[in-house]
Image 1 (cartoon, helix red, strand yellow):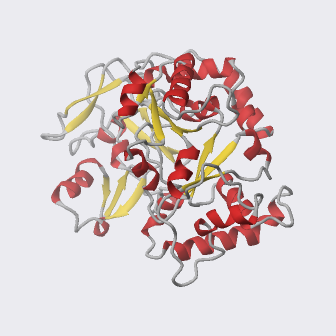
Image 2 (cartoon, helix red, strand yellow):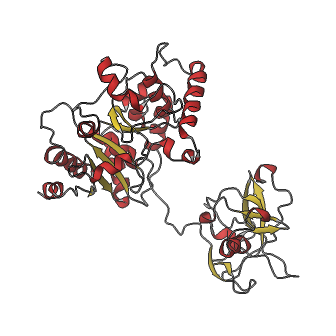
Length: 417
């Protein structure tokens, strides 16, 4: 009843599913009550899993920086041409007579930027993609699409086209979304349409792949959700339920080998299955905390919360990435607040500043101060495989502030940015 009421108001979803059974129940209710698929109908809705619930529905070519190009159509021409020129020697799956649609779907499945967006007609496959790489600290989501309603609104056909395979008449309906090349004056349609790719690669088949191909409006699909009878539904998977759903899917036979039917997929499947699931408590291995510094006036320092023996690592388990060095001139025109970030947290050597790859990645290690002039540090820093690790120079008592002399004169050249 709740689903029917929301559908009448054009406000369908988002819904929340905390288990596989609850997810399937929502899918079936939406399928019948809103998308109007009959119980025994062969065809049904499509699904797309998102690791993070807030992600939008724009294809790769319209995100990841590619949209910074002034003439994106020219860039797409170049990407398609280079992929086709170089692909034959790298795969034995490519038919000698592959058409433009088959090439485009191969590009999508192998990570090249396109205007395609992946969907599957398997509800549990969509759910698997939503939770498989989610650590459980944020919500995931599964989008549910009625491709027939989409195409009825855009190309006025209550059907999903299989371009390159179907009749010439049907091809004409979707060909405007994939010109042979973007010659001067070529204009894309604005809204996306739903298409079925030919299964010319095993991965496309095993993932039961479907696509929407997007036009000139990168947000065209989400805008359709505002229609009086929207063709999109969003099902949110709360982060706290992600790990349990992962286990349920694995028990039901949905795993990496199912999705990626090759030796790489099997290797990931076996690795995940035999990985210990017992997690250490967050405090294990932690021997420091942040407090107001005693050596840096008005600043923050790192203090031992337990006794640390000489030679012990200070930050075991710290996932800090390699330091990068930037010149002061590169940020001199930024705001005062931004410049203060560099002065407060970077390792400063003349005009060069050693920083994390992004200041959002600051860990306690970045707060260790140098000792007062004339005093000796109690921590040493050394380079281990292009990363910086900290060790106690002597026995350190609980309550002591940690200090280190930063000397990166022998920093590996690869870290100089």
